[in-house]
Image (cartoon, rainbow, N blue to C red):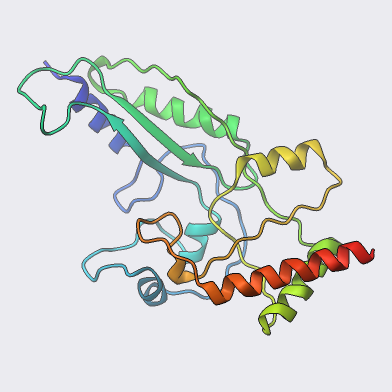
Length: 226
C-alpha cells in the first residue's frame, strides 16, 4: 500500500524532464533574442561546482529570461528526527511557478493542475489552498522616462547603459501596469553577478549602491525639471 510521500515524490518529479526543463504541456516560453553568454561564464559568475550541471535546454540566457520554471519552495512532512516506519496519510508542498511574459498566470495554473492530476499515481487526491497568482511583466523601454533613466545611469556609472532581461517578475508591478496603462514603469535594483540575489550569501557592492543612489537623484532632478 503506497503512502502519500511516495505518491507526492512520483507526481512532483513528473514536473521536470530529465535535463531539468519544465515538462508541463501548456506552459509557454517567450520568443526573444539573447546576447552571447556561455556555460563557462555562468559557472564563473555563479560559483557552480565543477560536478554540477546547469538545468534546462536552449541558450543559457533564454533559460533565465524567457522560459517558465517550477520550483518546490517548501514541504510539510515528518522530519528526519521524527521519522518512523509508518504510512503517511498526507503531504503538503508549496509549488512556485514562474510564468514567461506572454502567458496569463491563470492559464499557466490550469496547465500545471492538469499535469499534476494526470500524473497523480496510485489514485492520490490533490487539494489546493493558498493559491496566489502573479502575472508576468515585461518593461516597455520605448518611453521618454526610460530614456531619461538610461541617460542618468550612464552619467552616474560612467559607462554606457545596456538593456537586459531578468528571470522573474514582481506581481504587483503587473497589477500596477494593468491599473495604470499609461504609466511608465521601470523597476531598478543594485545587483551584479557577485550579489547572488536570493542566495544565503547575498551581498551588495557598496560603490555600485552609491552610484545607483546618484543615478536616482539625477533622475528625480530631471523629472522635476519637466
